[in-house]
Image (cartoon, rainbow, N blue to C red; front, side):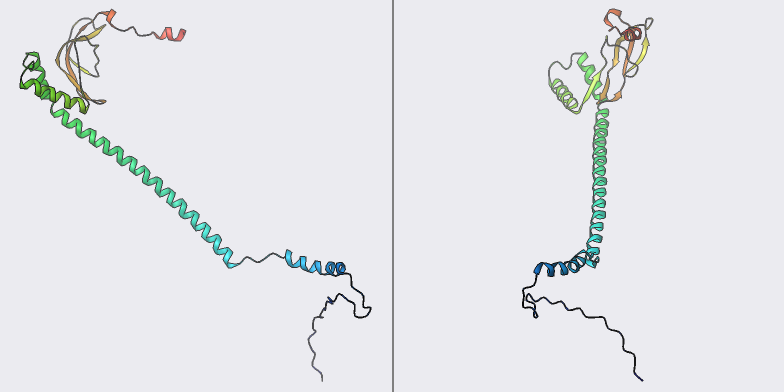
Length: 212
């Protein structure tokens, strides 16, 4: 009893000799190359399987993009924090300056009364008054409230009003007002009277604006 042998694939042998052993003639090389070309093209066209190295590079590129986005977000948050901190620092400094200036308003009132009595024309008090005025001017403290100015309820505290109130102006200034930058530290205490309508700037009417 004979055992069955597995069938073997036929072996193809390609004769690449340039001279035919039977006819001793030179073979046509072009035909030989054309016969071998399809096999070579099939080998070249076959896609190369994706290797582990290519997958690793793709994963690294993805992680790099994620880390770059995280870094940009953290950088933007830190820049916003610095802007907020700087704004808060400036606001706190202005608040402190305004608080210090407000404590000296009574001293400035005393100097105004001394000036009104002629006590600051000469002598050491004049030098002191000039120095204090220079310091407060450099800080941004400004006084307001002069006779003849238009009355503004946002800036002036009226203790007495005379006339019909059509053209209110400041009469007597009992106490000057002070502002620090855009902040009003103290309203001016004044009396109000009627001013000359000719001295009041004419406001453009809404009808005239519509006509234009």
